[in-house]
Image (cartoon, rainbow, N blue to C red; front, side, top):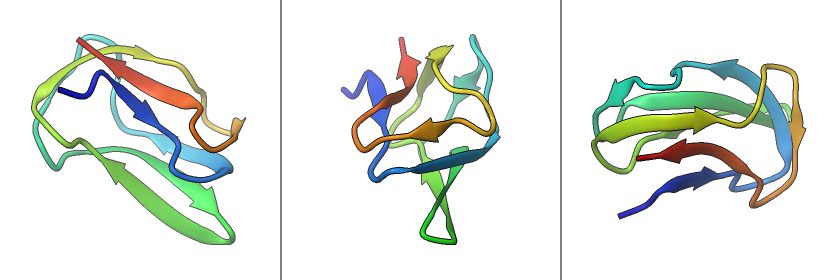
Length: 71
């Protein structure tokens, strides 16, 4: 079971669609990451609860940075 959502590529956080304590379903959109002028929606791989959101809108992230943690 995955406990962390890591950035698949370097980019900029455009939108965060979840908050701490929120229940999420598999396939639900979590955040939008802009990389190379393309918007990539990162989706949940499983059902769970958001433990923490470690980034803010506008943050620049590197590959493998932990963006969201799950319980």
